[in-house]
Image (cartoon, rainbow, N blue to C red; front, side, top):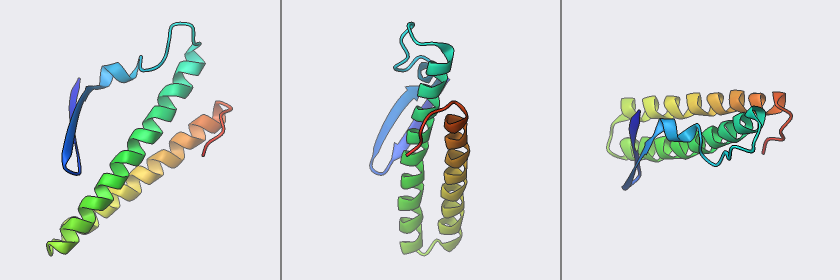
Length: 97
């Protein structure tokens, strides 16, 4: 599945199917692959949350209060998602940041 991201003033494209094999050589166990992909998701979400907050700030400056609050809510939900993913890493025996 192709997915297009807008980050600030730049864009990037990637295919989500690629994430499943990203930096996960065949020599890694399924558990190690899972650990790697969850770590990747956390970083990816952090990038998105930062972008949501930047655009929330811009929306506020444009007088778009409702949009500002909605984007802040999305960023908070992303933070919650990451806290849950960090619990996954803990359950896998990995240290989180």
